[in-house]
Length: 196
Image 1 (tube, rainbow, N blue to C red):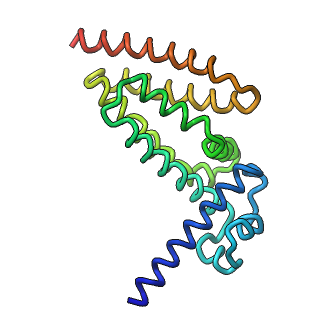
Image 2: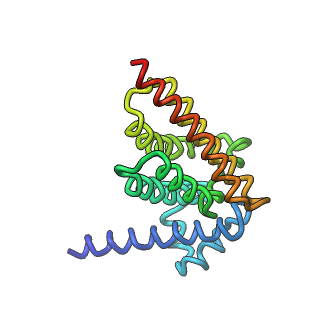
């Protein structure tokens, strides 16, 4: 019984640290993510922090994975039985959040940090898989290669809009851009379904 209580407390502390790390990354960026800031934000001791995360890189990757898992679950829940337009709207809303953009900062940092790049890959693959699943459900058998092009195109488009949104907030234009993607995707899905 005591072991279960300790484990539950440890999981709560870990989650508290991850939530604090996300808040620090949103407020200060990846470059401003420090152990001291996370410790203060989480309200934990230095020992508790380093017990769960031995390095800043490990903490940053875990924080991004923590957000990505929550976003992936939210996307799946919100898009069950949804049509293409609703799916795009949910994806757009999620990728406009400061937490998503903070995660993209790590991707940029990974360009010159091989260890960070390797650490981020599994979470990026998992989030990509979770984003592709609703698209697969919408189009059925569009063909793996064509679906891959449209799924990767959409993810790249959403990332680009998220980064662009840092300098200019133009949600109406973003929706129009995504509408154009949706029209092209719909045309391909119809063509693919009719040619099979």
